[in-house]
Length: 398
Image (cartoon, rainbow, N blue to C red; front, side, top):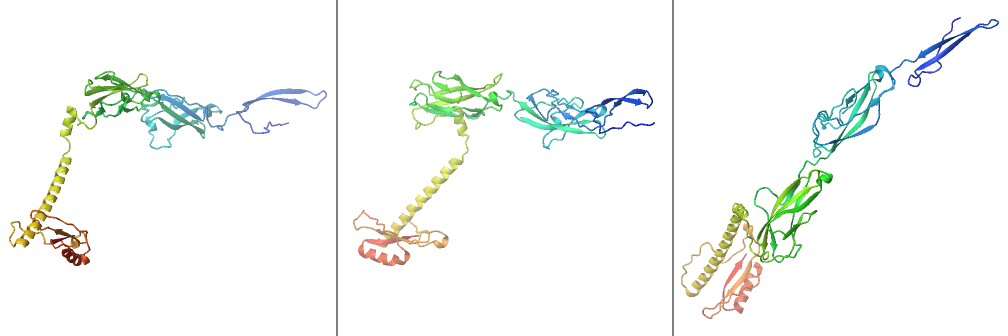
């Protein structure tokens, strides 16, 4: 007799790795005799399971300014197979963002999945980054899986407050003008500052550190507004120097100071008296404004001179026509009357103005009539002469 032991369905080692089977053999005699035999069946492993991570995504936190080679966290994956098929190795997968310098930021231990930051991280430069890690077994063929890792850089109070206004760049200081008639609480100026950190490390407070005259000015702690604390009097000094301290809420707190210059005036119409440094800076100012003023004055003077010469020439010609004498003023380029100069690209209409002189000695009367069109010029002129016999000259301007 020959018998075989066969399986009834596929075996899964991960479900049941071993079977204990008892085989009973019985003869057909009387009485029947039998014997039994125990067989142990062990199911061998095949690489049919990929490594599985304990989490689909990991979130790790690391404080900025960390020391290099700092352990920031670990990932873990297991394989249900056995032997080499269950041995897992870890690796960093290429980042989806090609500009992320992942190879210079973190590394992973291939055997245990620990993650070592390779360099000091800066919250202000890189607040968070993410990448994927892979876990592969050593089976043939090897099976693998991956998980997402997100690293959050925790802010550290490593930035001092930066004053935006007034600028402290070593140039001429900014001077604030305050009228002596200002009421208590008058807004003098506002100190504006920022902090590159975040959270409570960026919360700023302001306080008056020094003052030429204590009790005259105050600083609002949360807004940075500098206001008068009381009414001003004639006994108060003209110039005041204030030092304002700006401090963040970090641990330990960092601070910066700003210097303010205040000038008390009897009204904003009073000439501004600059501080010595400011006066020196103004002396070195660009002379462009001076050039513009000189040019404007020159053009105005030339125009006034041209008008005076024109009037003198016209009066001289009129006097010469009346007395038959000469005039020492040369005619020069001035025409007897002005005509349309539209061909030169200027005005295109002519206007007539009649100048009438009365017969009374040492007195004169100029009568300016409304402008007329060229087609009516002769007719209007003749009519004006008939109505005003004292009119002797007529000017036509274009």
